[in-house]
Amino acid sequence: MAVFSRRIPAEFGSNRLTRALEAARKRGSIVDLTESNPTRAGFAADPTHLATLLAAPEAVRYDPDPRGWIGARRAVVEYYGRRGRIVDEDRIVLTSSTSEAYALLFKLLCNASDEVLVPAPSYPLFEFLASAECVIAAPYQLTFDGRRWGIELPELERALTSRSRAIVVVAPNNPTGSVLTADDLEAVMRLCRDNGLVLICDEVFADYPHDLPARFVPTPYDGEGAVVFTLNGLSKVAGLPQLKLGWIVASGDDRAICGVLTRLEFLSDLYLSVGTPIQRCLPALLDIAPSIQESIRGALSANLRTLRAAVADTALSVLPVEAGWTAVVRAPRIFDDETFALKLLEEESTLVQPGYFYDFEEDGYLVLSLLTPPAVFAEGVQRLEAFVVNLCKRS
Ligand SMILES: Cc1ncc(COP(=O)(O)O)c(C=O)c1O
Image (cartoon, rainbow, N blue to C red):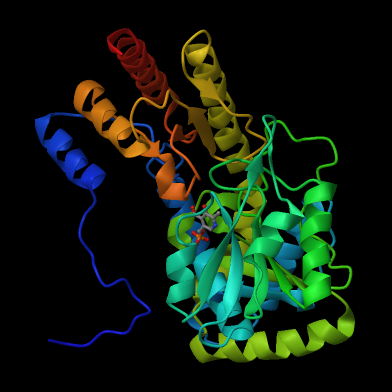
C-alpha cells in the first residue's frame, strides 16, 4: 500500500449527516438550507455574456507576470476605490482563489510545524489548508457577549506559542457574520506588533453588510507596525467561484513590504496559476460585480427577514448578523447539534448545518445559508419551526 504524507487526513469516511442526506435524497426531494454556491442558488451569470467576456482576443498570447496582469491589478484597485479604500497596484498579487492565497501565505511565512492562529467558530477548511502546508492551525475562540461575537486579547494570548507566525481574522466571519470593531482590531494588532506576527485578513464577504456595529473598521486594514495581507476574490465579490480568481493585497510599511512582495512573487512564479483569459476579463467582471452583489444582497435580506419572522415566539432565536451569507440560529439543546440536524432531515426532509462543522464551543447552534433561493428558504424555515414546536411538545 502506498504511504501518504501526514499533510492529508488519514481517513476519508463519510460522516453520519452525509450518509443520512444520501438516504433522504433517495426517499424524495429535500429542502436544502445550506446552499452557498451562487451558481446553484439562482445567481448564475448569463452564459452568452460570460462567453463574450471570456473570449478576449489578447488571451491567445502568454505573457505572464507573477503578480498578475497589470490591467487586472488596476481593476482590483478600482474595485477598492468603489469601496472607498485606497490600495496600491504594486502591492497586489493575483491568485486562482482565496484558498490558494492561504496556501501561498502559509508557504511564505511558515516552516514545518509553525502555527497560525485561526478563529473559532469559523471557516472549516483552515485545519486542512494549514495541514497541507505542514502548518498547524491553532484556534482562538471568538466570544459571544449576548450581542456580538468579538475577539479578546486573552483568547489570542492563550493560542500564542513560540511557533506562532500569523493571525488569521475572517471579517465578516463565516458563519457568525461578525466584523471587526476598533477594539477587536486593537487586540489583534497589539499581539501582532508585540510578537512579530503577520495579520491575514479574509474579507471575502465584505460586500454583504447587514447590521454593522458602531466602531466597525472596514478592511483592508492599514498595518500600523505589522504586515497585513487582505484576501478576496471573484467567488463572493461577483458570485463567480467557477472562474477561479482571487487576490492578496499587502499593507504595511514600505521596507517590510518590499521583502514580502519579492518572496510572494517568487512563490507565485513557481505556479503562475491564474489563467490569462480570466485576468484579461477581470476589469469587465468587476464592472458588473456591483449589480450582481445588489441582487445577492436582495436575497440575503429577504431571507433574513423571513427567518426572523418565522422564529419569533418560538424556542429558536437568530443571532445578530452583522454581514455575510450565513445566519446562526440558536436551537433548544435537547440533542447534540448533529442529532438535531439528523432528526430534522429524517422528520422534515430539511437540511441545515450543525454548529460543530464550524467548531462552535458548545451545542445548540445551527447554520443556515442566506443564499438559499427565497422560496426554498421560506419553506425550509417553516419546516424547522414545525420541527421545533413538535420537539418542545414531546420533551
Ligand atoms: C471565509 C471564506 N474564505 C474563503 C473561502 C473560499 O473562497 P475561494 O472560492 O476564493 O477559495 C470561503 C468559501 O466559502 C469562505 O467562506
